[in-house]
Length: 438
Image (cartoon, rainbow, N blue to C red; front, side):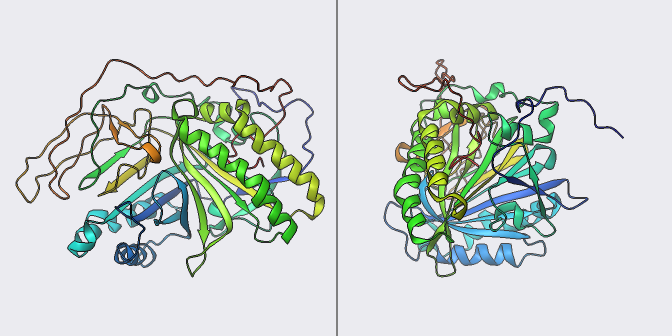
């Protein structure tokens, strides 16, 4: 049977042929929906984490890896920068079956783990999970080489295929199958007004879900196999531009649309950070991420730096980049935080349509249910901003209910090209890469 005609044309230029090869993931027959879960344990203080989270880390490992539906692939990370705190332990877990992933996460039970900790540990430990379902029709992946295939590519039975949807504006969108018939327009819920009062996070249990067309991206860099000269070039020249780009997104959430964005380093068995990193987080929409990648000087610097690096090392280059992007329908993501600082987790600057329930606490505080929306700015200045659509469970340590008031002002959304930046040449770039273009 012939494939149905596209409603929206490819953005690929006519008669276009990429100059460099790229590959994308091919999943086994019968796999239609993937499930991804990020799990974290951290010390809830500004002091360096020591033994406070070791017990919860052990319980996480037992709960996930020895479950009857364990993840089929997983990676562990050290926190480097962004929307969390130093000293956190982070896992990313993948399943190729939605039901198995959700069952495993449900049995993990963050409140149970937290309540089982010794009291002197419990008060200093925060736990969270961020999980999401991805139909493969709304997934795109891209790899610069076949000698390094992380993330979803670690799932059993996966293969890769070379493709030509790369290195032009809109290439990442073109690689999403459903983009043939869906523009993934930003949900109206991504606009919102800031409240005047925020919850403390500590002593609270916050859970919720997403609005329509929210995007998750994990974009990585690998230079473990590089020679000394290429390692020095990446670490001294290219990586600083990547950090500057991430810094812009953290500091300009209204324009960049970043939420819960973290810079992570893969860790070895001894806990040391390897020469392998990724940026991972959510964005208000695909278009918001595309606009930053296409127009802003911080991403342009990443792109030009990557070109210079590639020209310098040519065919001997061992540096690898990759990414995976999911466009999420309403309700396909879930967020849960137990006893977390307001600098932790899903930092949203748009409506999240999160629904949280409250329960009576041990000291007799009454159950409360409030409508709100969630907005969380950068970790460095972070506070939880609660919005319409979310309620707060105060039953973890008995904190009183949070009162939320809503001012009438609304936030601006449009991203603009900065003064003095010449982008008239429209230099092709991989518009979904948080790091170097792939």
